[in-house]
Image (cartoon, rainbow, N blue to C red; front, side):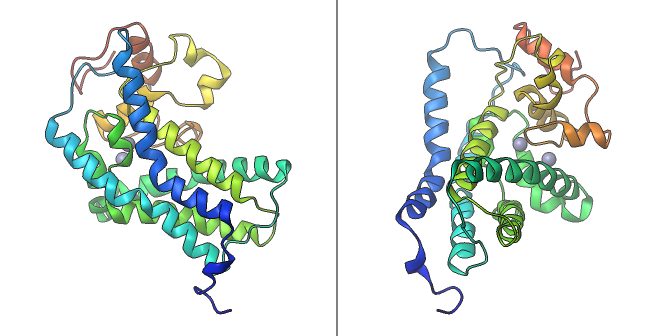
Length: 259
Ligand SMILES: [Zn+2]
Ligand SMILES: [Zn+2]
């Protein structure tokens, strides 16, 4: 049983998860669009619309990059680098949260690195979308998606050799990340104007937060939380202001506008 050859060791539930992870982005985007198209009163963050050309490019990028996560997880599983040791509820929940916080950290440092001149070419494709929409959530260069996922799965593999590790918890995290990432690129604010003043609002971002990263290009590097942006002073001071404007139904009219 040499490395990279043990495909027979893949359990049925793991195969189902891996196939699901390839398509879950597309399904969620479709459902999200179906839902928002029926809503009359959506709260736009930027009152601008992306071009048809942008949407087509994002869709193309999405087709190319969405299988990357599953392929990397599969390679780590069959090579024995990722060890699945337990599927009890405690391990599922713990795995989810450990991977959540690692990914917050990994995303922050790798994202900031990709904004350095030397690595910018890797990240440029994602920033072609100045005004985001759900398809921007899957619009990356193949290299960026690979680096991002390798960082998550490598950490998970290392962790799984020392602590009990759940495949369900791991894939549940990926699904959660896909769903929140679509919201983060939707250019629609679903939080209320009071959200920034709550404890949750202090920690967990809302769609306005990442919309500002695309509109202004720098700062607000965080994924789901703003913890590392606060820690390293890379959070836009007017992040709350943009959220409140959107929540009050007064979207910003220009990319450069500040509330
Ligand atoms: Zn960026
Ligand atoms: Zn983005």
